[in-house]
Image (tube, rainbow, N blue to C red; front, top):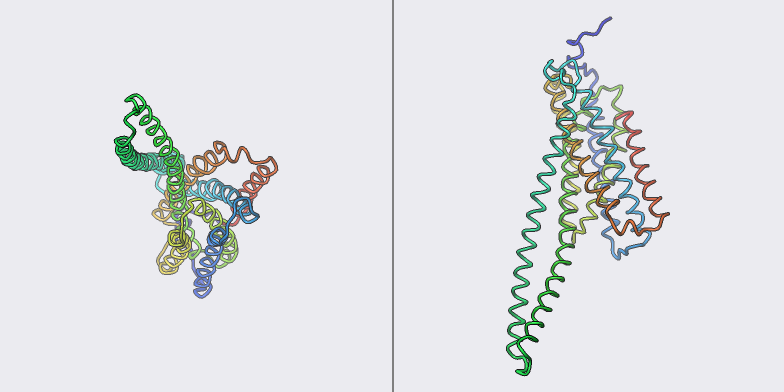
Amino acid sequence: TTTTAGDECASPAMENYNLPLRVGALFIILATSALGIFTPIVLHKISPYNKGSLRDWMLTMGKFFGTGVILATAFVHMLPEALENFDSDCLSDGWKSYGAFAGVFCMISSFALQLLELAAVANVERIRAKKATESLSADIEKRHTSNSSLDSSMTANQITTLETECHDHAHEHIHSAGLLEDEEAFKHIGTLILELGIVMHSIIIGITLSNTGSDEFVTLLIALVFHQFFEGVALGTRINDMNIKGWTKPLLMGTLFIVMTPIGCAIGIGIHSSFNPNSSSSILASAILDSLSAGILLYNVYISLMSQEINHNADFRRTPFIRKFVCFVSMYCGAGLMALLGKWA
């Protein structure tokens, strides 16, 4: 029997919709996500935390593992799904005729993020320059006050030399402190961008899970349990890099990640009787969101995680070869395991 486009676009039969199982899946995903993201955060927050310790080394490997997870999420889970959806027979010919909309939306989100990050960096530098000017002015004023009480035997040239040395020293101190502040601010920006991409994808995952047929539901749930755990570890290790004092912000960022897929599940359960995942609007929305999310994650991985933290990181370049080797193996394992999950999720 030939399957027509109309059959493909019809709402799938949801016979024997097991509501308790799907509600249970919501809480399973919630618990798994919490375990994934809060394990590295708690390990990092427990005092005393020493650089170079076994715990620090484990979290470093977790961070590289997470980089691989994020890269594979974009390449294996998001882009192929978007490409498939944009090629669906349920879409109008206008969407299907071009054939590269997934790449276009991925590129658009990458460009948008580059502009957003540029604006954020400019704002950080403007704030730092203002603080530096205020600090320098206060220091010069203090030195002028001190100079008024200097021994009258000092010549004008000696006083000018002293002021110049003071100015240079203060400028050097402020510049070095500012660089550290900038680095922390850039890590904040990168991590927030990363969470944005993950959260957008999580809603789609939840709705899809709740509207999956009974035959495929358990397999997809098991795959998503690992998917959410690995993504949680990836995001949790990046939140640690923000070096936030206190628990409030890490808890808020962790909670946002934890609840988004269950919220998607709840939405899917609520609309399952009327929702048609094969409708053109559903397929198009999923395709666009997956493409945009892929662009966000790819930009973040290559610009923030791999380029800045590996290729252009002086500390990493000074790391012994064996540690570098283990870090790269961890990253490849993360990518490989996430790619393997792409067979089912």
